[in-house]
Image (cartoon, rainbow, N blue to C red):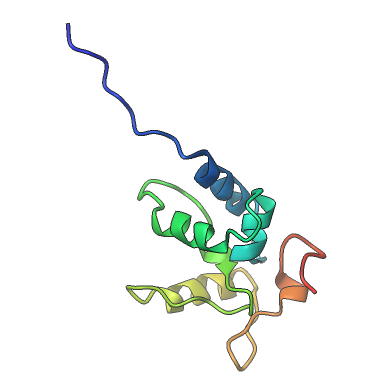
Length: 114
């Protein structure tokens, strides 16, 4: 009799981060730091970035709604910034001439941006 196969362990912190990202509504954005805070990981913005880097190929998650604290799209290997911007613009998110998103207007959750 062969032993049962072990499945990959579930990273609960990462799953909480994914759950928060999944709640960002269409036409809104959130920051790495805000997502970390909402997931119970204060000062865990880098953990959010790592979770997104490790997002599995079959995972349907609105990763493109995550921006940095200044309201800009963060650069990544592979140069997906333009694709992310196009998706956000299609959802109605506006960018300033300096490529920033007004987090007071488009940030989620409401009231979490100064």
